[in-house]
Amino acid sequence: MMDCKTGLQQYFRQLAEEEPILILDRKSTPEIPETVNSNSERSEESVDDENLHKLVKLEQEVSTCTLCELSRTRHSVIFGVGNPHSRLLLIGEAPGADEDAQGIPFVGRAGKMLDKVLKDLKLERSELYIANILKCRPPGNRDPLPSEAAACLPYLLQQIELIQPDVIVALGKVAAVRLLKLSPNISVKSLRDSILEYRKRPFVVTYHPSYLLRYPGEKISVLKDMQVVLKLLSGEIKWQPGDMTKFLK
Ligand code: URA
Image 1 (spheres, protein in one colour):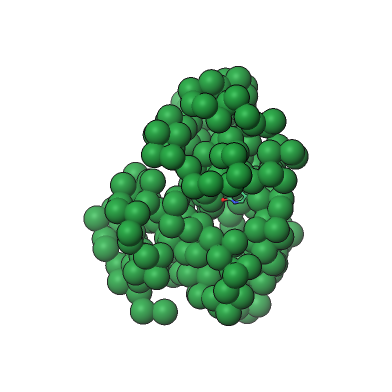
Image 2 (image 1 turned 90 degrees about the vertical axis):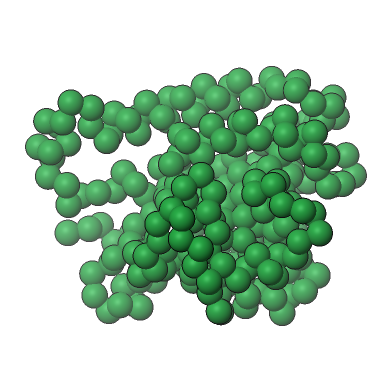
C-alpha cells in the first residue's frame, strides 16, 4: 500500500477516486519487492545514490564557476532546488535579484506566482526539481546572452542526466528557445500546442510566471499545460520519443 502523503497523490485520489496512480518521486516504488532490489547487481537505489552524489559534486563545482562574465557580478550561484529524485523538472530563465540574494530559484515575485500555480495543482515544491537556464543573475534582469546560456548549458544537461526526470517543463520562451535552439521570434503560444521532445523526454512549454504577473488571465492556460504534464506523468497520456503530439487545450 502506498503512503499517501503528497498533495499530488491526494489530487489523483480525488480525481480517480481510487488508489493513487502517480508518484513524483522515483525512489518511492514500494511495489517493487525488496528482494528484486537487493538481488540485482546494481540496484536502482544505488544508481540513484550515485547520481545524488554526483549532483552534490556538480553543485560544488558550479559554485565556483567563472565561465562567463556573470561570475563577476553575482552574489550567489543558483544551482537548483527540490527533489533530486523527482520525475518532474521545471526550467526557468535566470535568477533575479531576490534569487541572487537568497541562492534559491524562484523566491521573488515570479516565484510567489509559481507557488500559487503549484498550490492550485496541489503540488509541493519538494516534489519537483526547479532549475534555470542560467545559474547566475544577469545584471538588471536582462535576458540571458546566447554566450551565457551556452556556457551554462552543460551544467543543466548534467543535472538532467543525473535527475533523470520523466517530463521537463520550460517556463517561458527563454528556456524553450535555448534548449530547443529555436528562433527567438517564436511565440510561447505556438509552442504550447504540442508535447515537444528534449533529450528523449516529453517537453512541455508554458508561460513564465512573470508573464502571469502581467497577464493573470493566462494562469488558466498554465494550469491546462500542467494538466497535460500530470497526465504524462500518470501515464494517462502515452508518449514515446519521436511522438509529436498535438494538443488542443
Ligand atoms: N525567474 C526565473 O526564470 N528564474 C528564477 O529563478 C526567478 C525568476
